[in-house]
Image 1 (cartoon, rainbow over the protein chains, first blue to last red):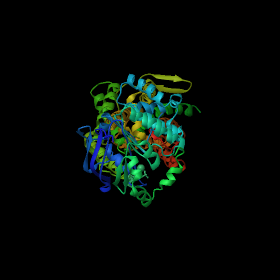
Image 2 (cartoon, rainbow over the protein chains, first blue to last red):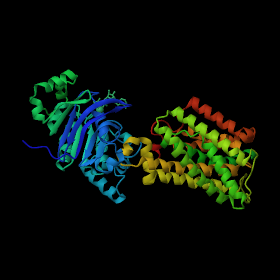
Image 3 (cartoon, rainbow over the protein chains, first blue to last red):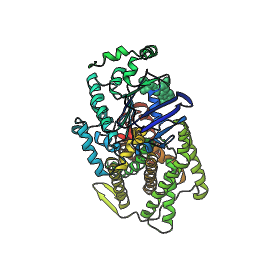
Length: 256
Length: 294
Ligand SMILES: Nc1ncnc2c1ncn2[C@@H]1O[C@H](COP(=O)(O)OP(=O)(O)OP(=O)(O)O)[C@@H](O)[C@H]1O
Ligand SMILES: [Mg+2]
């Protein structure tokens, strides 16, 4: 059995929340180059809270975050961005009143204008639907185009670590599937560490190398997808927590 | 009729003055979320800075630059040492309005013993008179219009074409996402206070130039007029503020001709109240505020 790679980003025992009330408790998670780690769990489990803590938006009550060997706990989001951590939030993931091109330029804010131009071309190759609409206002995009823009924006800086919060929410099953299989897998193939939250458990298990199940703010279960699927308590945990594994199956067209 | 043609000329000057003031005011709100009620007092303080420069025998155009610099530095410090610390503590929107009101009163009361309550005016030639089809303006008034046009074009260029300006719009639209992009939003906000503070200072000087004399008590009127134009155009929207300035500037001068010049600010205030009742979101509507610039 393959060993997991040396982590690019890891969190140890982090506790955080809003206004002094912890939402996630003592959570540890790691993701290494070339690896896709999926976090699944019911609504309100604290998945987004975990990601916001990892990228410096939320202050940690306890715990440490390591980027490579460096302790980056408590560092501000702009520093993490500079150091190669890219984050696409679940909501408010683009600058709505700016044009598509301006969104990409802001994604590449840290680059020179020549580099920005080159990167716009490169991410345009990855998401061919974007180049024809560079002058459009971002709030005029469809749900799918909008997600592509949000991901293209984060790719502008060519991050080492990619953190995606429910990238497939609001996408058609077909689009969601192609996003996960083509783009997410391809990015991992390029050596990026990809950490993503995914509502649909089956889809997550198909794309991930490692999966953590977050329930009520703690990691209840983690492991390789194949192992998780064999475990008796996996489905129980989901059913008990109110997430219907079968329902998420229905939304996934290419179920095997 | 001639009276109204002349008033139209004054309206052009009035709208220029208001536009400079209102754009600065509305950008402070649009990007930093700050309804800065001390804006009028910073304007009048800057007008006095220009007054002392001018009194030393230097042309008012240099005084204007001094006023702009003063306004920039003063506004920057005001944010750094008063507003930003309160905002960081999580003070509510209404709380911040009250803080700025307190700052406004403090400036007025600190200024009073220095400058006195009496009216002063700049000592400068107003320049020759220029006539065109019933409109009579001094060269200074024409220059004020020119300054305003250039400033509006510069603001447009800044927001639409520069990296800093786009970062300002991005910060206005989504400050958290801006930070996730690596944009140093603190520095962006500092620049906003410097730039809008310069507009505020400049507006104070041109407003003082445009009236025969000015006194410390004019600060409130300056604020109301800028506020009225900003709200009319849609709070936080620079282009809206420009449109608002055109409308308020024209209406106040025409009403001054038809009625009495003393009531200009009452008219501006009346428009403000009407807008609040009829179209509180302003002419350029809803979402996006400043970020939508362009
Ligand atoms: N800004 C906030 N302020 C206060 N509480 C919040 C805030 N955001 C989230 N919460 C609370 O924290 C808990 C976890 O929310 P979180 O968004 O992390 O869940 P999630 O697992 O991402 O859910 P979903 O699958 O619906 O996105 C919820 O109880 C939520 O109400
Ligand atoms: Mg979430």
